[in-house]
Length: 146
Image (tube, rainbow, N blue to C red):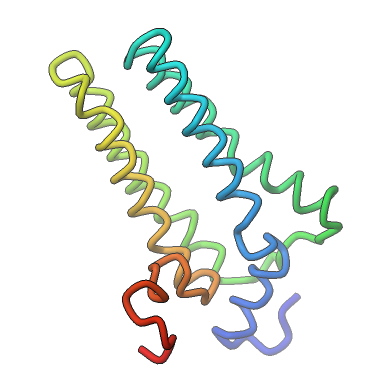
């Protein structure tokens, strides 16, 4: 339970529980690479299926990695910042549905649209984790002062 419910405390709790989001990003990267290899070997449609199915596994697998490899407890049940990532999932799924619907018409758009949908989901992680890395601020402002 979060005793002092400040934004900073809630963000710190998520960073602690999910190891700063690192395991989820690493697993996501492995799945994107896998889908890319499938696209090369079998085509875009099977690769999109791989991307979609493995995408549903990212959060559960990242949670397992955080718990068992890093020994992290779950975030506090009353942590309000966890809802931000969950709510942004709905927008991401909408983008993936659009990519899927356009797959027969424009297969060359499937991966860029999927990347765009997932990228918009990651933007919410800046607020959830309180970590500007998700917005790539360090590239825009290397001093980290902006």
